[in-house]
Length: 170
Image 1 (cartoon, rainbow, N blue to C red):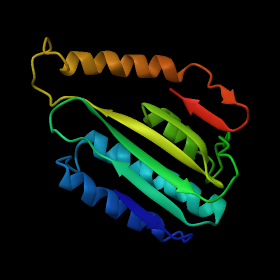
Image 2: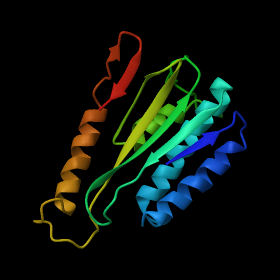
Image 3: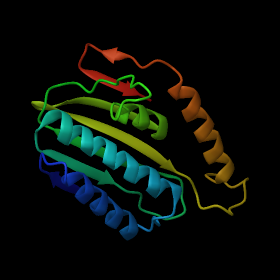
């Protein structure tokens, strides 16, 4: 699923509404923490594309198939700018500059790569099995807790740069 984004700040709200409707259609409820996190990530990545590139962009969303099973939700924003995303250290009084820090803190994995003449920034969220399953079940709540702990440990490592062309935190 994808949505064409014009280089207009009003597109951020449209992108959030579009993502919410896709989530609802896939069985992910608005009040589910995954939905709230994903909508925030959509806001951040689309805002970055619209504000910092001035170019049209494409928002892509890959949602899981079966409800209640551990799975991955993937969000991508591709734009025509060849400028690499640059994480910034925003001061306490700054009104911007925290987008990629939020992505890094909220996503289980994220990165970017060159795509044609532009770039693609992506992030993934792990969707754990429905609460209430026995913790001994393969793919159950206990396994998701282990995955979450590993994700936190991985995010504390420094991320490599690949020849100045790609940045990926896995």
